[in-house]
Image 1 (cartoon, rainbow, N blue to C red):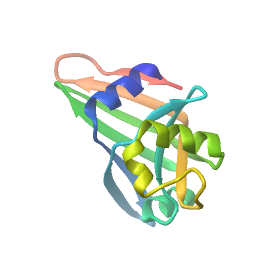
Image 2: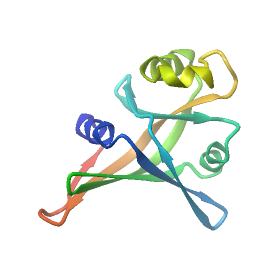
Image 3: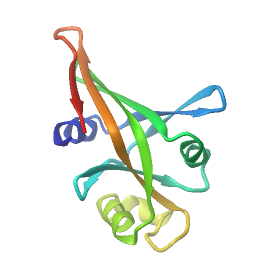
Image 4: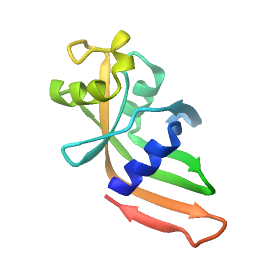
Length: 130
C-alpha cells in the first residue's frame, strides 16, 4: 500500500471515477493519506461525489507519472471519526478554510478490497492488493 500511496503523492492529481445511475462520473482529486494502515481520501458530504459513493462505494482512481500509470479500484468506506478527519486536514492545511474535523461536511473515506495495477508501455502490468 505504501508504494501505491507514494506513487499517487508523486502524481499530485489523480482522477476518481464513480457511478451515478448508469453514468460514469470522473473528477480530479488531490488528497491521499495513510492513517491506521488504511489508504484515505477526502471530500465533502454535500458534494455529488459523496452521494455517488454512498449509493455505490465501488470506485476507481487513475494517475500518471513518468511513463507509468496506476489504476486503483476498490470500495470506499466512510470514517466519521474526528481523529481520521484531523489527520487528513493536518496533512492538507490548505483545506482548513473549507473543512474542519468538527463540521458535519468533512468526509474521509478509506479503500477496502483494493487492487492497484501499475502499467507502462515498457513493462508488464504489476498488481498489488490490500
